Amino acid sequence: MTAQGEVFRSHLPVIMGDRGMVVAGHPKAAEAGAAMLRSGGNAMDAAIAAAATLAIAVPFMNGLGGDAIALYATSDGDVTAINGSGATPRAASPDELRKRGLTAMPQRGPLPVTVPGVVAAWGEALDRFGTRSLAEVLEPAIELAEQGVALDTSSIQFFNGAEYADLVKQFPALALGFGPAGGRRLGERLKQPAAAETMRVLSTQGWRSFYSGDLARKWLAEARDSGVLIDCEDLEEHATVFQGGLSISWRGREVHVAPPNSQGLALLTMLALSEVQPAPPPPDRSDPLIDPVAYLARKTAAFSMRDAYCADQRRICLPPNLLSPDRLRKLALQAGPAMSVAGGGDTSTLVVIDAAGRAVSWVQSLFESFGSGVVCPIHGLVLHNRAMLERLDNDPVRGLRAGFRTFHTLCPALVTGKKGVELAIATPGDHGQPQALFQVIRRHFEQGLDIQSAIEWPRLRHDDGREVMLESRCPSKWNDALAKAGWTVKRVDSWSRFMGGVNAIRKRDGLVMGGADPRRSSYAIAE
Image 1 (cartoon, rainbow, N blue to C red):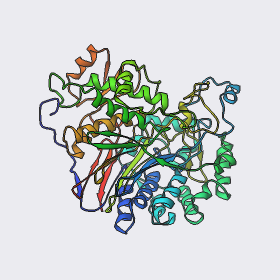
Image 2: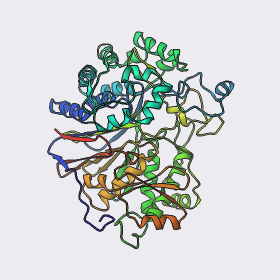
Image 3: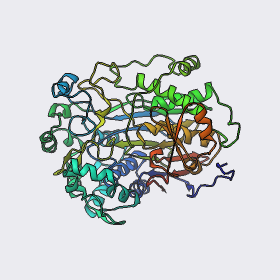
Image 4: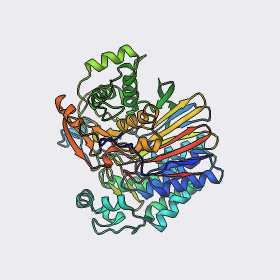
């Protein structure tokens, strides 16, 4: 039911197919991935083709200078986590930054830049799980960069908005590669010849050329001229990490996320708490599943867990039975406030399931809009600002340490059952990622909504403090319930981009069903 008591009907259809499917954060990316499946490629071939195309199609959200975290599942449901995040530079330390007069890590500029890991993640994941060459999977992205991506409504809103105008003032080189602020028209083509040329070098010389050799030296020289601390040794030492995923049993299924430094632990904790301490349905029946006050209690507890353990695994140790019922009950009672957070969630995602049942949930990002703002214009790179949330102190989890991976918001997820993968799901939205995934997963598996309806159902989000965001379609009676519990309600757009942009594929009885979020430019295509 909706707040008005009407039966909820999604306004986009559930895309269905008998073989494979791709759902991505832009139609061109979904098209590239689906074409790869139709030509005989597998799930990873399709995922990297879609991921590279996303880097061109929505360059303010992700790109060659960003990072990635993903999950891959075999047809039997065996899950591997792919950590394509990079380490902080060897020259970065709290002492070094304090010598520069800083008391906190800057939000943008050269100092929060870490080693960009997305290119290595594409290449190494393809080497390990794919069947096609890097040159083959990069071709759709290269063609799009050369011919130009037609700007859609979401891109127009960004390039004509205040955020881009402010960024261009601070980082004028952005306008050289992506045009001036304002005045953009729907369908106007954005060409990126420098990025196309870099991808062509990768096609001929391989992904390793981004980290060592002539290409690496040249783009790094541009970056260092802007003050970036990364050096050649930082690049050469980078490697994608492949390891087992983190999972829990939930409602007779297994939910898998990437282990720390990803914040996937927060999603697992929220789901586990929903079983250990199930909340009664709201007394007014305005929503058949979620009590907003109980939701926020779980979220606060889960993010307390996240902030204690989601860091480079060399600096934390996950206790055994971390998500046991007894530990969770104590956590729910003892949880303190989560760390102060900020950001809009400029990330791109895609999910793939192929005809054999192999699946990928892939998330890649510049962290915020155009990341650090630092541009390497000759090579078409904008570098991310992933170290922005690190602290210039000796905090055991968040204190900046040279050569370590930072805390990471990217949060891919897979749900498996006895017959393999049942759901591949991912969303942008920085600190809102586990929150959006939690709501959609429960809407689908517990409320029984089809995957598209579960995605379209109105959502809520909490970042920090006592303010909680509700989409304007949320039940109006939630306001009173939250106010009585000491929360302040901020109503946002009916289809707010702050609530993410969930991409999902549900597999059941040999059928794949895609859900694409209208809050962003998500799109589903069946093989």
